[in-house]
Figure 1 (cartoon, rainbow, N blue to C red):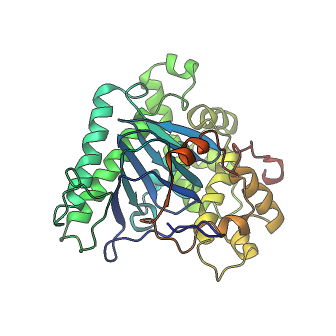
Figure 2 (cartoon, rainbow, N blue to C red):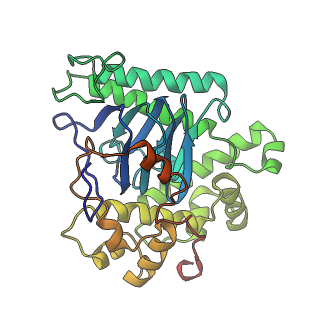
Figure 3 (cartoon, rainbow, N blue to C red):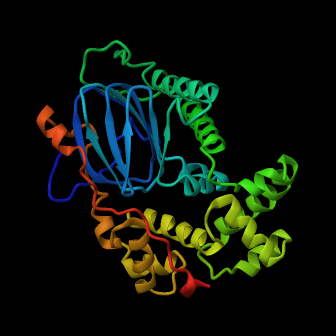
Length: 343
């Protein structure tokens, strides 16, 4: 990724594929950027630091970071080492509502380490990451596990069905992360009610999320969604908060913002057109909510996603890498979204 006045990125894939795997062994710095792909960074050697949505994630050998789609992130190398990058556009071609919901709940990123995940799940996630790497490079003359090259990427097209196999493993990876992310979804009191009750509750919750995914651009209300899943307004409101750690309206606004981020890639649409298409009542309401969620104005956010070559980062000297420690990206920790105007 070449540095200029507008740090941006576009994912370059093999042929017309939806996935890309890249091995980096240089201490490269990547300025703030975003893309609609989910990104997985697996640290095979050394230390790294990634700032996602204003949150710092220090990484060391054996850690994996899954960055959700459309999250602004900045990458700092802190020592020589090796990283596996996996990027995939899963949302648009697959249209799986549950996957879209998962990324909203896991936003901005999830750090996977031996300390934070069960050992068997941690091992399974690493196995999947390595299998994806090996499948991607299966027809390449390069051997990423043993190559002395500092930057390894394949340019020949993938054989038939290999991309499908990779996407299947990425879906399994995402599901395992979602099911095992350290608890924040269900309160202690809810857990104490027992697994049977939680199972009964999560079905209407998933139905609600599916309904929101279909109608979020419309002026839907809490009452309407609660009625759709057959629950009272007050019980549904409490249940939704317990399982998602967000109110219904916070979730709705995040859903609209996520959709707006995808639309911002299209420069033929104005910010006002995007605001209305995403379900906001006005461009000013959209701008306020968007800035609270991302730390950027919509027009400024748009400039962070244009023409960039991911294979070319800025090389850090050891002194520069050390100086980068403690740097905080522009985007601050997202503020709670005021929902009074949307109710």
